[in-house]
Structure formats: structure tokens, C-alpha cells
Image (cartoon, rainbow, N blue to C red):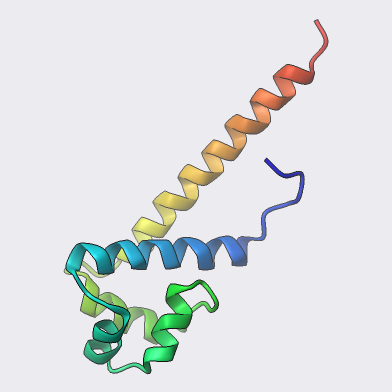
Length: 103
């Protein structure tokens, strides 16, 4: 683990991209198909899928409408993934602190 602080914007973009990629895979869709069904420019979808940008709320809702049966599914998946990463980071820090504590 790095001593550098996590950048939440970077982490959010990465997690969002991972969640969307997983949803596309599960549904057998490509970035092109998602863009076409959502009425969005393909480059916009690709930029989101590589974690380059955080989409506007209306874009997120449009994507979610295409990919999900339940609105909020993407948000919940992102929240769960970020919580899991935070928990892992806490556990790693605790383990490192325990190793550094003199006996």
C-alpha cells in the first residue's frame, strides 16, 4: 500500500468504470451498443468506461436506464465497491501499525 493519500475523484472514476464494464459484460453489450441505446456519443461512453471522466447526472441516469432494471443500481454498486476498498485499506493500515508496534 502506498503512503500517498487516495484521491476520491480518481477512485470514483475508476470504480465507476469497473462497475459499468461489469454491467456491460453481464448484459453482453459493447460501448458502441450502450452509446447507441442511450443516445450518447460513443466517445463520451468510452471516456466514462476508461475512467477518464465523471459523467453528468443526466448522462448517468440515461446510462442507468439502459443498463439497469432498478434505478440506483449503479450508485449502490459503486458505494459497495468503495466501502469494500476503504475497509481493505483500514485493515492494511491496522496490520502495518501492528507490525510497527514494539513488543
